[in-house]
Amino acid sequence: DIQMTQSPSSLSASVGDRVTITCRASQVTKNFLAWYQQKPGEVPKLLIYDTSTLRSGVPSRFSGSGSGTDFTLTISSLQPEDVATYYCQKYNSVPLTFGGGTKVEIK
Amino acid sequence: EVQLVESGGVVVQPGGSLRLTCAASGFTFDDYAMYWVRQTPGKGLEWVSFITWDGGITHFGDSVKGRFTTSRDNGKSSLYLQMNNLRDEDTALYYCARGTSAHAFTYCDCWGQGTLVTVSS
Image 1 (tube, one colour):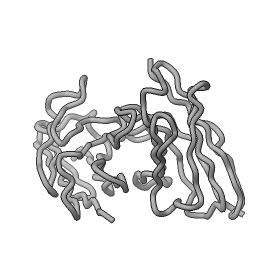
Image 2 (tube, each protein chain N blue to C red):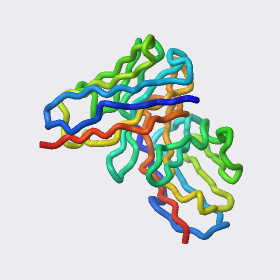
Image 3 (tube, rainbow over the protein chains, first blue to last red):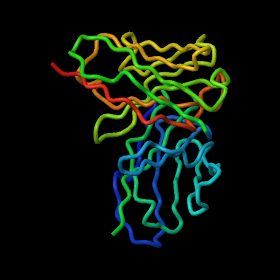
């Protein structure tokens, strides 16, 4: 089965910092890669799909990039409301695997 | 407004069975494939199942294959997860989620609040 490895598993950054989260697939997933944000005590919310398409209403400081097996979620200027755990997910074929998550905190 | 409301989560003994229900509203239910995703308390997300718009095709994660089934009743705008031979490791918050295609695997654009299943003797 394809594994989705996220790194780092957690990070602490200052408000205004640029934050980068990586998701690596063990096999090629084409561009069928999504990112979700889960704030503490809340339901996961879709941020980005098809690797780089920002869901309507998501702030433009979020962006996604990548191809093949390596993907990145970037927050260009970290805000206090971005404290959350972020998950990647592949959906090109079953199993529709999620990454292990990256917990983002404010320093 | 799109709403997904899960129910049916309870405490059940190992080896027991349970059926979860997801009631959908605010959209045309039979236009979409649907998913179950679970989250162990304090841990990450795990995809559980997929079902096409008409229930004709289903897929399951390896950890539940052969024990769980999924079905839907489009007339009632409801999705179901039948869970048999439950194990301790099935303890989780179970989310119902909507795909963005009737047939194909996609991301999930809407999620319910989840229903908690606890497997314990």
